[in-house]
Length: 182
Image (tube, rainbow, N blue to C red; front, side, top):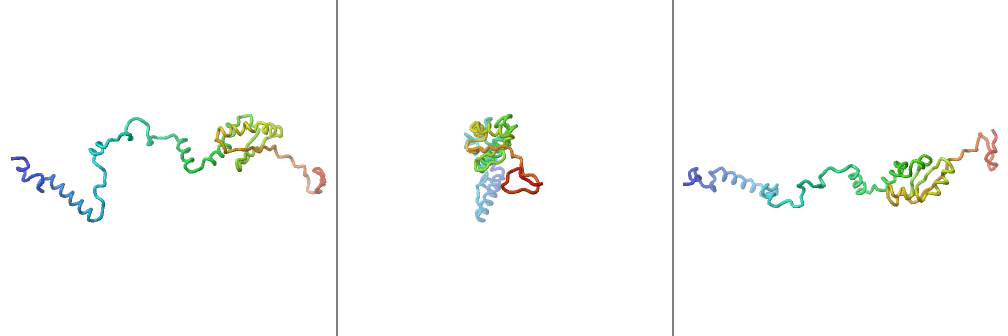
């Protein structure tokens, strides 16, 4: 006589613990199906998961997309995905001006505005403005190397603001810069 027969029934009979659990599970599944719920869509057992294999998966010591990423790489990909590349390039021109053009030029000239890919630069003297106009092709190449092509296509270099010769409260129009009364 087998152990099941001595225990009072076969494994298929509801009297054994295993059979009772199986019957309760089947009753619960049938009730869920009757209620319109999906049955059997949950996680698979570990045995089946191992049997499927994870070839090319994320196990092992190699790098995968879940690894921590450098902040610069993440912000770079985010800015490309959202289309912010041009605005970030423009900000980089102003923020890294000294690094892009070098300490000599940055000590004597500063960018003031960037509109329609034209960078407006103000030099501290007319001599520096003339020198910058002579090397503006090199400056544009340096900017393109630092932030990318097409961010700045042209430079408008101006000298310092000239002093006003208009002194005094009263003046006569058309009479010259030093023709004042007062």
